[in-house]
Image 1 (cartoon, rainbow, N blue to C red):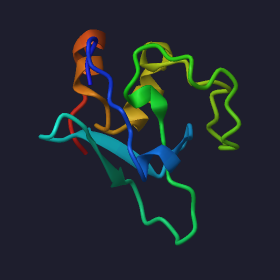
Image 2 (image 1 turned 180 degrees about the vertical axis):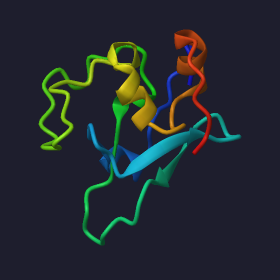
Image 3 (image 1 turned 135 degrees about the horizontal axis):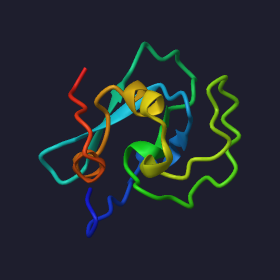
Length: 109
């Protein structure tokens, strides 16, 4: 959520995984958490994935990424390590504190 507050994921969010080419994005909600938003239609039985870099400035969660995406970065080290093209691909699904920290203007899609 910010530098001092981390979101504790509960079920079913705990069953999601990282992908460098996710099928969901996260947005702040009014309950001090995030809502998962489908980025495109998701087939029944598909894994729900989001880009961990959209919520973490620096991360140790995925030191070796195995997402299998053609856009795989090899690791999810955090927002601070993304290129401008990778930031743009997140299309507004970025924790607000990251936008403020990085000084970039990312609106909602």
